Length: 299
Image (cartoon, rainbow, N blue to C red; front, side):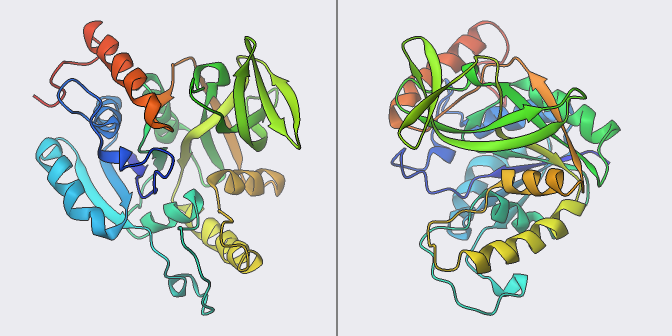
């Protein structure tokens, strides 16, 4: 059974200022998602599932169905505020959804095979999809998951600080710890993160998570249990978010599962800020010029 690609596309994009998930970046208006799915099909994924807000479903279908029909199976699931589906009867006020780990629970009823989770607004490169398919096909078990590890120096923005899950890896190549650093930036030719008004250096090749995770469906039950605990513990914190690294951290610390950190030297790029758009467009143009992608992606 071919693995599934689960795309996190329900975010608000508050810093970007518009729906970057369906903004055009390629020479013919292709979205970043287009390039992700193109690489995923080439690598061997068999299905793509979009996590979106329900009110966006018609827009997404209009954009992607004509391109993907006959190429890969598609499905759509919705991230919402309904807590009763998780057995939580208490009303908890939220302005924003509960975060990326909560989002993947939206796919629990439609995904029955090993799957990979990615962000809609991140360009990852073919190498990562191929390595993830190989892992999900040959190595993944209910107690052995994976994460693609990017070199932090290849994941930064020129227009502001970024958040990254900084990975500590053991001698066997497995994740020991992942720490979310919420303010990482370049300074005087070096890379630093800031915490409690102090700055600490990071080496260029420090592995970080860009939310490119490999799981089996067993993770849904684990995540649901963790989310119930998290929601009740943070019911008075309307900005608290349940991130995917919290799943990884829990499984590693409780020896429930290992996470193989699969390294890639690919250049990551994405759109956190509106100012990132020209850089992303230029980067894709270069990849088209050197033959990595055709000019008309879906022709």
